[in-house]
Length: 209
Image 1 (spheres, rainbow, N blue to C red):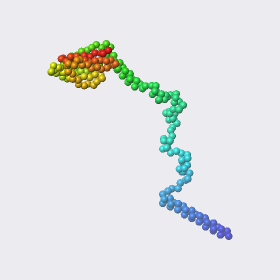
Image 2: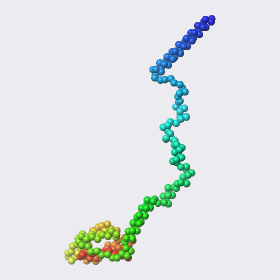
Image 3: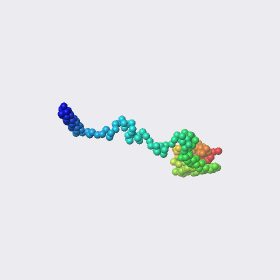
Image 4: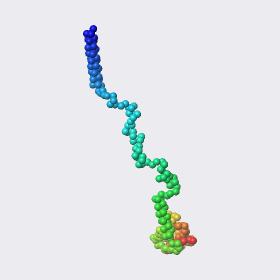
């Protein structure tokens, strides 16, 4: 009886060893054929566990901001009113310095322009030959002779004239129609240019009060 039990135990152990050998060989064959390696379970973590405990480094810049950066670059809402004024209020009650300087320069230029005209403006007269010119940049007018002719008892002159209120254009005037005049306003003052004579062409300018 004891001998039978001993033989059975030997056979059982031998069978177990054989089975384990077959399993080991099978595993080796599969890993070799399928190109994978058996590793310890504790060496790896599942995607589900990763998502619970970790955030991928590529997502941090788009989802989060460093606290240090917030402290350095951002301002608490409670501090805004202490350091800032609403744009609407500023635009309503202030003028840009650049705009102010521009307006001041225009004002100074206008004042210089106004002051350049004498308060008491004496009448001025100028005789112009066939190609004569009378240009007064201060007053903003110019006269440029183009031609002179006479016939049938009349004299005719052609000239270009420009005033602050009118661009340069060609005028043709004949004698026998009295004194011709051209009025314009300059700095709220009214002036008049007259053609007083034809031969030679004589022009004058005066202030009308």
